Image (cartoon, rainbow over all chains, first blue to last red; front, top):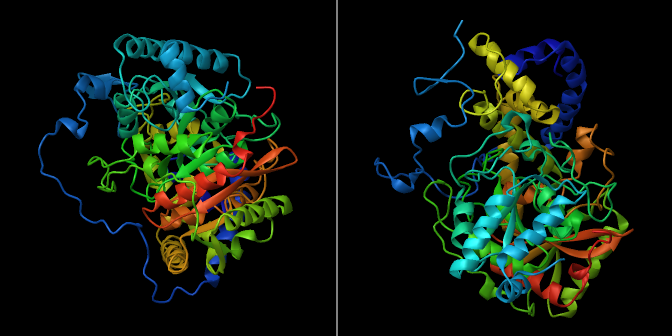
Length: 96
Length: 473
């Protein structure tokens, strides 16, 4: 069960500002989904390995070189969608 | 107004690509389906002129194509149907878009979808719901509802969508068109804005298996920029053959469970009989973990989503609200930019991955995923394909399920196991219930698209469901 206090904390971890109204609205819906998830408690998974990925691929490497096909963007392209920029940088909000 | 790729090629040959493209754009312009979030009229027409003037050749030369709005298109707004990406114009093309352009295809617009592909009805779009061409009061399915509705409504001959838990096959089923979810890794995900990357694949839509296959052949193939891309060239058009003699069909009874509409069940069983009469052999197979697929799928998808969507903070692209301190700004940007369903999935995914709950939810779901994958491996020892309904029922009404997440999630019961196992699957029209299309799902072994396409093609060649069109378009 997620309590209203839990939800405030999860909202913080998720960087989602939740109003009192949101918390009111989401708490029962999220709990009904979590309740549904408990179906999995019935499955015996003793000794079963997890599947993170369906393909037997691992450690796909390439040479550490600039590649034309690598999709590198120019500075102008990289900044083209940024709401705030300054001196060729993305402008972030203040830390504190 | 519905035309195959070959018919359009003849039309372009006799007239011009410009005329063909203009005709589709005009139809989109007066449509009431809301299948498109944006159209790229000017660039489409100028590209068509270029193709006409230079006699540019290619498997899709001069052919219009619609693209789901979560696939990056250089110079064309890409929003994922979210307020948070309103106005975002990608500075690069997805791999599939590069491939389409090389083949001569013309992008006519970006199609509507559930916000960030999280849904089964295309109702969670920030840009309003898409309507089903067969009944304007019903949903087109989702999340690629705009792509399916565009093809079904004659607003695009072919389209691309993406399928994380059924998002190509569900709308294909609800809109009476063909939709393919390829084996994981066959189509590069480079440029597909991620929702749950261990599950999703881009997939083609068309009104026939042949056109789906032509589009698939164009967009599939190795791309080193997606580390899960498989180095395997494909040419499936050559495997289309009207022949299922000796094909071994498995029918998992678990997919005909409680909640499956009687008419859907009958249409699917009749379709299996049709294939038997054409020489296929049918056996019943057991897939005992099917009922756990839905919970495992949603836990994994939400967990991956909570991580993937962390990038939307209003710094590099997208919505930015008034600046405050670092964390408050990001929390406010995300609170105003995301819709309710996206927020719910991020919250639940964050919870499922958080200290103390990771093993109970996320790790447990990954173990159940192994059992589901093993169900498929076991079944495919004795059969070549599995056949099931794509959706347990035909298209439901707009607004009918949107306020009850669980009932909406339950609609995905027959499609999510396929993504958990990473196998390929196609939905083809196989009947009607109360005037609404029903989809037949044909599932194959890893990398064995050739067999499911052949089975689907044979079914199509011997039935006429795929030739039916909605009225009033």
